[in-house]
Image (cartoon, rainbow over all chains, first blue to last red):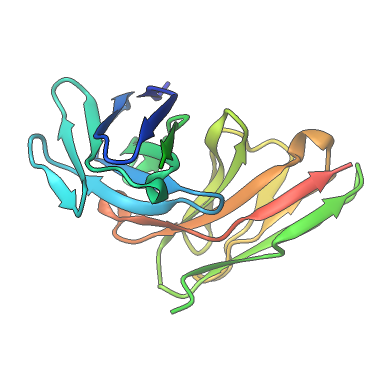
Length: 112
Length: 113
């Protein structure tokens, strides 16, 4: 059975702090790993990672994948209150469809 | 492009009632999925489709039916609603198969009394 574990489950920081969110996975026929941000609405796409060791960056957010150790991290530098959200990781695997299995998410709260 | 649209946004049902949640996408995506999201449970896959006429079960399919007669539409039917089906339902579509990005609709909040 496919398994995704995110840690920590919740995190409270102050503006300006740097945070690292972790995602470990076990999926058959791994194909890619997606990160999403969810505020009080539908998840919005952040990154898709397919290759180990290649960092993807978007502003203050960056992410990297380690396919050997089966994990990914999402870094957020200089956090802002607008970064407060649930961050979800979802590896795609299985058949050619690449079914996404979602982790339970990390709840990030950024205080001013 | 409207992206992925869902209707209704909110719905209240009584136990035993049936209804259909609508989902449509205008991005010509082959892959469409339905998820439910419950507090502390993350997103769980109900049913998915890899193209018109092809559907398959996800992780939690019991109590739900789907069909995919066109590329654009993927309705989810609740046959006989139960309080355990109270949840937020998200439809999603995806381009490029396993290497594609998945986009979500805005969600339907369903309450079953």
